[in-house]
Image (tube, rainbow, N blue to C red; front, side, top):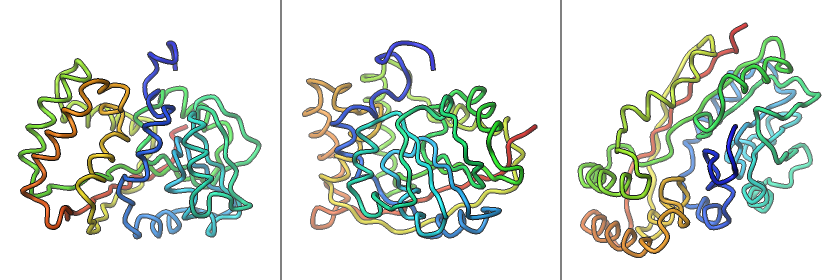
Amino acid sequence: MAGTLRERAGVSFEDADVVSNYPYRPSYPDDVYEKLVAIAPKRDCLLDIGCGPGKISRPLSRQFEKIIAIDPSRHMIELGQSLEEGRARNLHWIVGFAEDVDISDRPDLIVAAASIHWMDHKRLFARLRTYAASDHKVAVISGDAPFQPAWEADWQSFLGKWVPAISGEAFDPIGKQENWLAYKTYLDIDGSEEFSSPFEQKVEDFIRCQHSRDTFAPARLADRMSEFDLELREMLAPYASNERLSFVVKTKLVWGSIRP
C-alpha cells in the first residue's frame, strides 16, 4: 500500500484506542466457524489475513494443525494474544501486510474476515498464489453489525450526518459495498452463504463498538467525540430495554479459489 502511515487506508487499526474498543464488536455466528472447517480441503494450515485480534484464528486453533495470523497492527496482535486461545501453541502471529509477507507453508484455507477491503487486491492475490496449496480455498467474511435493527431508519440518518462530517466523503453505502466486492474478480467463486444469530449489547458497549471502526475512531472524532456519543446515546435510548439493545447479526461467507 502506497503513502505515508497517516495516509494509508486502515491505519486507524494501529491506534491503541481503536484496538481497546475492538472487543465490543459482536461475535460471528457459530455456524460461520463450522462452515469454514467444512470447506477447508485439508486442515494442515489456515492463513488468516488481516486477522485483527484473531476472531477467526483463535476459535479455530483446535481445528487446524497450524494457523498463521497476519495483521499490520501490533496492538491488534497483542490484544489477540491476551484473549482465549491467543497463546495456542499452533497459532503463529505475524506483524505485517498480507500483500508483502512470504511464508514457507502452503495454506489449505485462507480467510479474510472484515479485512479484504483494506488490501491491495492485485498485489494480494498475486502473492497468495505463490504459496497457496494447489487445492486451496479462500474465504471472505463480512458482516458483524446489526442487521435491519428496529432503529435502522434513525441509524441511516445518523450515518448520513456523521460520515461526511468526519470523513469528508459522501455517505454512499451502495458505492461502498460495490468497492468491498471488488475482490471477487480475482476468485473463482464456489459458493456463498449467510448466517444469522441473535445478539444483545449494552448501549454504552454499542457506542464503544463504533469507536473500533475506522470512520469513527477516537482520533478521527477528536473534540467531537463527546457530541457523537451523546447524539448516538439519545438516538438509541428509545430502542433499549434496561439500557440493552437486542438485534440480529448477519454474516456472509463467500468462498472460492484464486484464479490462475
